[in-house]
Image (cartoon, rainbow, N blue to C red; front, side, top):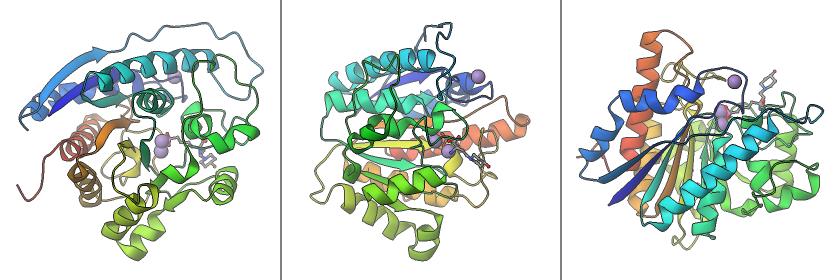
Length: 304
Ligand SMILES: N[C@](CCCC[B-](O)(O)O)(CCN1CCC(O)CC1)C(=O)O
Ligand SMILES: [Mn+2]
Ligand SMILES: [Mn+2]
Ligand SMILES: [Mn+2]
């Protein structure tokens, strides 16, 4: 099958320099040849050239709205075009604000797609519930229709429209959820399989329940937004917001294999790899984990 790889060198959604080097780190780790080794037709589109803007709004609770808004439009166009060309899209981050554009672009091509969000965090703060103002903690609030009444005006996001229903999202791996996010998740009934559920039910049941919850008929295109910090920090130390007690590589691989097995995985984000954090060994470990997850999203199976 055909894959289109897009580098998304964005860092403005969070305060720690380095996520803009995530795409190149994954390429240097051999990602493209490993995907080709799976027999895939891989088109590496290189990194998006994200326009740089001087921020013109300084009293907004969200930081860098102009840069993130502009990047989101560019990402959406690129993801849309990739999917419309008949390729599964692989978007390499870059901080998780990249998902605003990737999910919106995916929805333009496949309006009824569902989202599996694998992350230590819920990333559904609004600018008003966020304690940090960092937009990598907000992407889903920009996209979920039912959250819109709670959002303040957000300049520079006119091109991004809410495109998701709460019932079409499921979380796996949560273990650091803010009070405002907890309120939104409960109020909207967003399906959530935190590390508690992973421990309680095991990863097989969590994936099965998550998929059934968002797509009971088993016929919708799937968007996997995978934040590398969903994995245990021992597996992904080079990331900006590590939280102990994460997914094992076996659990991460299992999620990827099961989604790949549906044959409906249409867009994959791999977010929050920051090669500037930690030492060289930490970088290698993190990049290796990211590539392993991606390989299992695209057909590599532990059974052979
Ligand atoms: N929820 C956080 C973290 C977002 C992480 C984004 B990512 O893409 O990596 O999933 C805030 C986290 N929280 C802030 C207060 C602290 O005491 C505890 C951590 C936020 O800044 O919104
Ligand atoms: Mn930065
Ligand atoms: Mn996270
Ligand atoms: Mn995230």
